Image (cartoon, rainbow, N blue to C red; front, side, top):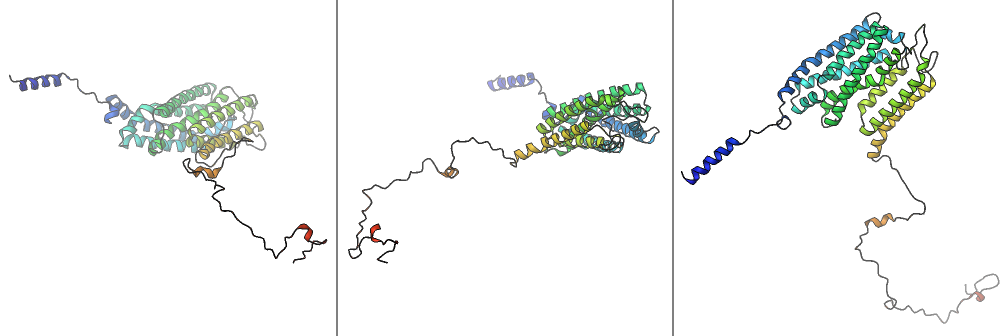
Length: 365
């Protein structure tokens, strides 16, 4: 056997002993088998959950007693206007329909991977639980009220988990508008709805801090409502200020306006809400507006913060364009300047102060 044949044989043995290359799903753009199964399950389960929740909402709006009547019977400081509440649900489920469409028709493997790993089937579970909350709210008993509170607590946990995963693993980017609009927004709308309003409303109902036509027991919850409003206002303002999240800002503002629009507890008039709570809600709305606008104005140069010290050095702005290597101006030497000889005309006498008259007249004028 020649040397060339021996080298060829050794190379063949080495190539057979090398391990097969492991392709990562993130690198190749193909989903792993488990992720593919999760995606298929999500594509079937999420539309079904949306259908269940829409049916529960429609049933709750048409049945007697309806959800609107349940809102009117049990008034709390966080009870929204029923019409604005259902309008919020319409916007949320329109965005979720976009979520389902994106998970089915998107050609991007990155988008489908993001949907599976960040949201998964938790969004569908939230919809099922929210439809259960509608039924429990309509039944309106002591046990169903307490159970509805725990249902909302579970929904809040699931929604916060989704938002945390999306924020740290797949942050929203304007370069991917469909992902931001149909993946981030539906989860944020669900989180804001539960944590900003429904959870506290159901908590006050569970403790019996409500007002109706026959019972008025809402006053003991005033200061707790003030504390919740202040803390949620600070939390939302910090979040909006650091992230510039327009979706969270608009959702919270809409829900606060819906609380103000509840006609059974108006801002001004008989049976109105307490003035101190109204003031705190207005301050909260103002803070989050400032937190949204001021960082953008500063970054775009519309707000200039000046800080000066009295007695500090004066900076010549015109000296910015002067180079250090520019030659300094040279003072002319006295010996180089020609002497200027002034010759006095002998015919004209030199005028002095004594040459003028007493009245200051010039005799030579």
